[in-house]
Image 1 (cartoon, rainbow, N blue to C red):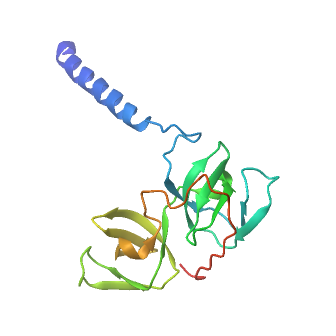
Image 2 (image 1 turned 180 degrees about the vertical axis):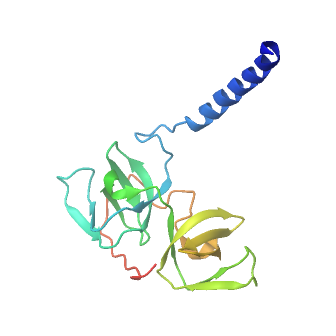
Length: 182
């Protein structure tokens, strides 16, 4: 019995090593996460600063949580982010979350399937924020409460895989206006 379990134990050990190695893969950033990447504002108000520290002036504030931001560079405690209006500023990591959200750039339908002409489950207003599950083949699966469905990726802010702002540029004042719902 001991002999017959040894190959099984060896196979399990190899699987654990392989899985552990994949989950421990880190990026060469202070957080260990890749850049660019998407985060969301955790709480409001959230101060957006001219530089990575409390001594830098506040350029503007998010008055509502949930807005998606693209991290373009980071320090251990601060994230330089690009916002939906093209502004760029620094936000403390404690004011962010890895929860993925998107903003509808225009009014769009939330569909039952990832294909044009599919049953409409809900209508999303321009400027509304909604949770993102995944994107594939130009479609994104979104959710708001119990409502889940698909929208065209092209009408959403918060899905780009390339940097939207140049991290070498200085921080800029934002003028983001979002719907109160979502």
